[in-house]
Length: 459
Image 1 (tube, rainbow, N blue to C red):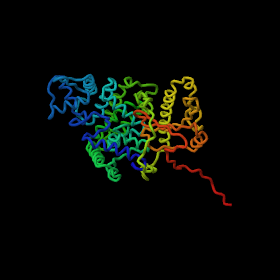
Image 2: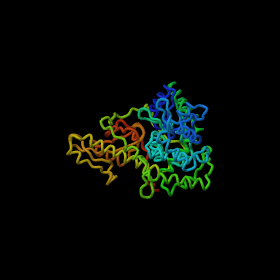
Image 3: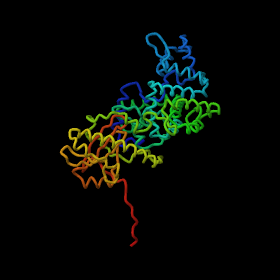
Image 4: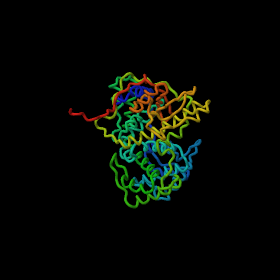
């Protein structure tokens, strides 16, 4: 990633510097696995022992209890050890489906049961796993994430958010394919001459990613389980056939017909739980970018910020260089989704801003819903009643990330210099913020990126 080219040097430096202040390297999780427990293949015997109130058989009982507790399968109030509600149902379901064993080929079935039951019971931390997976699959191809668990682990670390910023946002804004998500912040930290602590933080994250990738089979299995629960029933078999038992990134051992049939039956048993609607599409909370962010309660009172101050280096075109092949259709769909969400946020902000002037609130119009050629999105008002034409530019990343102004929007700004406002919205996935930019846009460097072409006359 061309971190300097997309103008995020300061944000990356701060993120790495903060990371370098601690030995704990954080990531956003998609599975509960930690130390000795890296999958569910030997957990059924542990749960049976806990249910029978006998000591579990393990070379490090204390650590195994901590792992089972982290997976929300047991609880240990005081010195007692007992199954949680999730642990009880999971153990029974595993027995019911004849998967209370240690066979690797049954790991997806066991994981599918755990995640299905956890969703039914709203059990933490699985709610967070579902929410994050929904967020990822709304941007990236879910099959590619499952298949490229080395890139997935890298993204999980880059998605750890500090002070409203996560480096992973850049891959979303650039619409990078999963196969091109890689960790290069250690090299960037050195070439950009960041502080010693930032360089240390960059190297620390790199070691964390490298150490976790061997555990990727469990994470890929967990994501495949969640994807099966989120998919319509008619699409599940193709997904199972596409993958199987993970061996290493992009290598899978196919399921036989009997295991495929059982996986389909297990997934179907949770359809009612997941709220299957018409077309058998499970209604997972947060199954798209709009749904994920809509759950956030906007803090309009603290949303307005001054225009960001970049590091002084002029942003280049950014991107991933010549290797990148842009999926323009997917980019347009993604930009449209984010644009709509940004407009909804600004519409709410304008209503909040004019709350003491109800006669003006009643006259606010979301004009782009009916006509997106006007050069602005929302017709609003200043508090003194003057017109206010608001063009919304939104991103899931920081305010400082580059954005584009069309020729039509620039002409509208020129023609309405006293009333035109660009509302730049950032941090859409966390707590949205905005800054206001007014013509002549002194805070911006405007670079021509589109040219009108006509054929030259030979005369």
